[in-house]
Length: 288
Image (cartoon, rainbow, N blue to C red):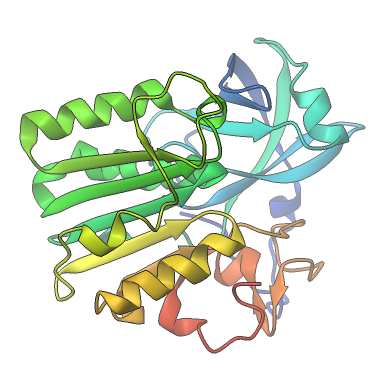
């Protein structure tokens, strides 16, 4: 299970601050800015979908990184890292066989019990597909326990699409089972080859078959996406209690000490990053 001590808990285990060393098994470019990392830990991570880890390099730094694989019984951990700063620039230069430090898993994550028997709708934008994959994988692995799965994934251009071949495999699974639908969108094609749709992730929602009494929604993407997706879901009659938002932002220490991720009185790295929307909808800073 995860280690989720709260900031007010005086009994935080000091071991939470000590990274385990993980060996890099694979580094594969997904786009010009993102690379896929597969690492091997000393023991299984024991995570839930939607949790994150703190990844470190000795003498360079540490950053929160989304877990991109579903729960596993082996010692493999998958992540996608965007080159967006001094630490991630160094990480992008690492090769298989080198080591990184891993702390965690941290955060709340998704509870699959909330999704069993339901029509599941996942709406993701850009890098949001990375943590959402940790939820999609276990759903696909036990598809008979869910009514259906619809994935709406958007990014700005075809060159920025993540996990393209895997999403095509999910589409083929949908054709075989009739229970999976994948809608891939880009804002613009930039004259690049593209076999999906053009538009925003909100575009398919008005015509999507949605049973408001038996649908659960999971959202992850840039802050601006949440506002407009939530408006569309409200128009379809979805109650806030069946919408889960993944707010992977501003996290830094992972153990509720620095306050960097604080949303009003809520620590995103501890109570989140996954929240049921009716629990945070009243917080002014929730979707900013």
